[in-house]
Image 1: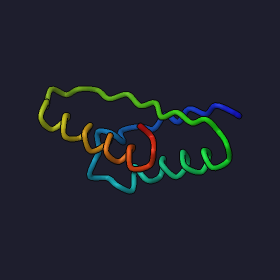
Image 2: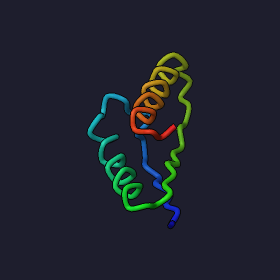
Image 3: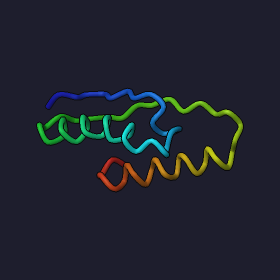
Length: 70
């Protein structure tokens, strides 16, 4: 089984961009269906907006969990 690492940009920090999230998620789900072991690797850079960042990361985690990516 091949191992694939998806490295999207600005998905976790852009929770209002559902389409942006979905583009990368389609790759992950499709590759998993083909039998690949898929990892999502994304940098999240703090801009010192602690409450907003916590909410954005919470939204991102919830979306990932909905698709078994936790």
